[in-house]
Length: 237
Image (cartoon, helix red, strand yellow):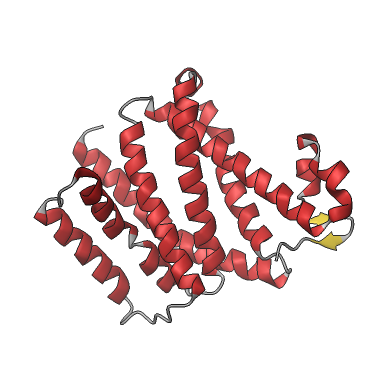
């Protein structure tokens, strides 16, 4: 893939990602209506990664690329940054409009440039810094002046943008030393497993009597964390 094709591919991703803010907002409205709270956000993020982890091995070359300890080690780092960033973003979007969430998440562009500057000990090129500033300004004013209140959902979204920026930089470093295809699979799969662990923990905190049977065995996680368990709606907060 040449630089022009890579740029077009990334541009296509931004279009799809923009739509996800609307879908995530609708999903969290439904989750809140059923009293899901944190559990709903965790479930959606987990399903998001689990689907990718299930489909990736169908592509040629993935199975061979995911072999080796380094691929799984680097995948764990990317999974932690990726899962945390998307989870915090989804938790916050329940209290924000899709436009505000998208604007604050777009701060990852600025954070990426700043983190690179701090890491390399020098500022990036002037065109890159100007481009980052223009993207942030455009995202904020595309529907008029951004209506910010500096409350916890907004700060949580800013923190998620910082994690996403860290993920972008880590991805650049990691894919230079291990297979990009392999680390894509391991990071997505490990992110899904993190989601399952968090779902299990949420259910166990909500149902202390089930600690022994529900939380002891990984085989019971799917039943433990299903939307309806023992006839009760799940809540995490």
